[in-house]
Length: 412
Picture (cartoon, rainbow, N blue to C red):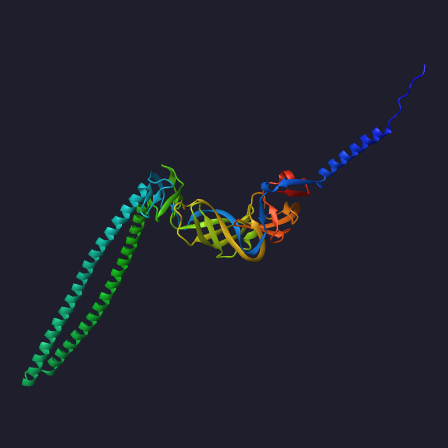
């Protein structure tokens, strides 16, 4: 029997192989990003690169803090007998925060007052003693003056009798001697009296010093007792309370802290990579969510913590209504003025200080991927340091779905 053989057709095999090769080539071409994709213009938005002068600001975050703070400490040993104000309450300088009790301090005050009153009474008694001693001195002086008058009278009589030839010269000499002796005695007694008066004055000063010291001790103890009513001391609000009712406290122990509400400063955390470029007195624009307030930097610390540097700023304008201690704020801190710099308006997806691949529109109405380096973000302006020229446009809309294409053509 004769078997018929089917004749092979090699051209079909070549066609299948060529088709498969073309398909794979197209797939590889597409995956490699060299294929061209079309996108409607209506689905795109653009940002134009602008060149001009720009004030560079650093973004900072922080909070308001009291410009005046007062730490309240225990004036003496005691126990917390009463708490009158809790944290967050508005206070004035005379507002009593809490009451401490110390019976022993009360006894010391009373004892000091008693001793002071005793010293005052002793001083008055001493004044009368001094007066009595002065009177005794004055009595002796008066007696001597009387003796002098008596001696002068006898001298005068003896002179008259001598003239009449009745008295002898010896009697006259005795009378003169008596006058001289009593006069010397009087002079000596007066000098003693003067020194006695000076001595009494010093004795009185010594007693006055002792009384003054005791008065100071009384005042100190009374002040300590009055300070057991712990007062705010300044206007503001009670920020913290460190003790509980019934707690015993030691001299100088921290009790509470009061801070001003209307006099505020700003504590900021500056980016580490820009902190060394910021000067003292640099302008600060503070956003409180209810307005922008101007301030200026007064202090920058040198220690870096968690990638930031702490700084303080003094407020130069009236506060907004929501300003209060511990309120979180954002701020823009002036760094420098940059001349002829390229920038665009900030849009989501573009990260400051990064290198990104973006689509750039060319003159042939085609989008071409290009590497662009972004610099600082100042306000809503993003600085471009490399990859773009003034007047060029970059796509600001989402192009994630076209990222695998090197070029994308725009259709009207």
